[in-house]
Every structure is written in C-alpha cells, then in structure tokens.
Length: 137
Image 1 (tube, rainbow, N blue to C red):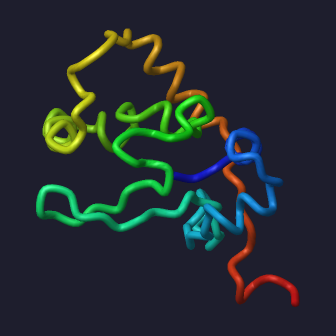
Image 2 (tube, rainbow, N blue to C red; image 1 turned 60 degrees about the vertical axis):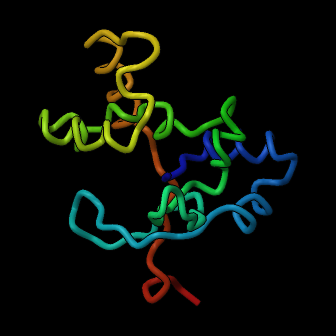
Image 3 (cartoon, rainbow, N blue to C red; image 1 turned 180 degrees about the vertical axis):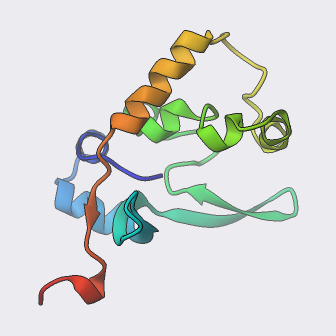
C-alpha cells in the first residue's frame, strides 16, 4: 500500500510514534515508474509473508485476521476493491472476488460513490523520492 503524507501521519499517530519512526518500523521504499516514465521510489507499507490455507500471501504488516489500524487505514485501502485494474473487466472482478471475502458483502456503493473514491485516489500525492543511485550523497 502506497502512502501519502496524510496516510503516514494518521498511521503514525494511531501507532503512537513519530512519523520518521513509523517509516523505519513499518515502511519500505518501492521502485516505481512515474507517469513520465522516470524511475522513482514510493513509500509503501511493509508486507509480511504468511501461509493461509496452504498458500503463501503477502499481507499488509497491519493485517492480523483483520485490519489493526482500520480507523486510520490509507486511502488506497479504503478504495479497495474499486481499483482501476480490478474494475477493468468482469473477469478481473471475479478473480479478485476469489481472494477478497468482502466483495458482494456489506453496503452497496453507487457508481457515483465509486467514481468519487477513485477521483480522490488519483488526486492523492504518494510520498516519493529519487531512486538511491540518483539521489545526491
């Protein structure tokens, strides 16, 4: 899960640590290609490898049978499963539903609600930095 400054601050507050300590304890930098095709690093929550039902999964560091930081979960989490790659086709939606027990459960979301969430996500500014080799020493 990629983090904005707002996401990181909210999560640090919930965990009761300073933002720089939160980053050291719970985050990692992921190499990414930006919209202009240039390499950047994005701040992401760490994953933990677990074995569930005989298969390996990369769960969020805060997922322990449920979200332990639910009240401060990042926008990217709040918009799931309404991500563009999941909404791209009925097949993608069905494949995601196989691993997401929440799909088809709970409150109904209108197209307007979903589009509003996706617009928020597009406007969000993820924390980035230049890749290590490109940063000044």
